[in-house]
Image (tube, rainbow, N blue to C red; front, top):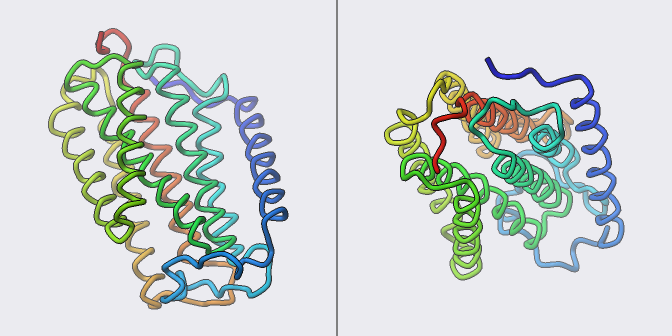
Length: 264
């Protein structure tokens, strides 16, 4: 049975999340609030989701910005002592790598929604690529018996390639992410899952279901069906919260695999 997260670990993770938020706020204060002097995000043509952009504000979309820190909290919970299972096949290097990835996802998303700049959008998309890359590489690692450190090196190399593609072909960013994510899901369920001793598949499926609901809300927010522009309750903020929950379920799935059957 997987180890529950201790109250101490939760407290440390919450404190580190608060410090991360203060760090982002300090960066925003140093760079803004005149975001118009930077190139705008490409989504500004479609209003960058439902939430009304606040002109001249340090944080242009507060609901979408602050909800992004749900990823940061989940990331710190993967890293701090007391939040990992010593009997899990998910080693500390992989767990910390996934945790750092989740933190980068949250920070990139926060900077995107706080500024609605092109550089913020770039960081946001990089975070998405990081998550998809980890899922794909960790599935390949189990399927092809690749060791933990080699898998992390492969993950880093794949991220470099994807970032280069993002710079060269930014218009295909969403399609590329979709292909990456679908590939990761197929490789995990078809090839890697049967080789994970004791793994709780329902956690992975629950993560997929949560992400499917989140994506549905993303679409409703994007096309204006579910939209109250001046409210602090935003569909895109719910997308962030559910996305972070899905990532937490993925982590729980990975750590439910029992040690003893890991790759050499």
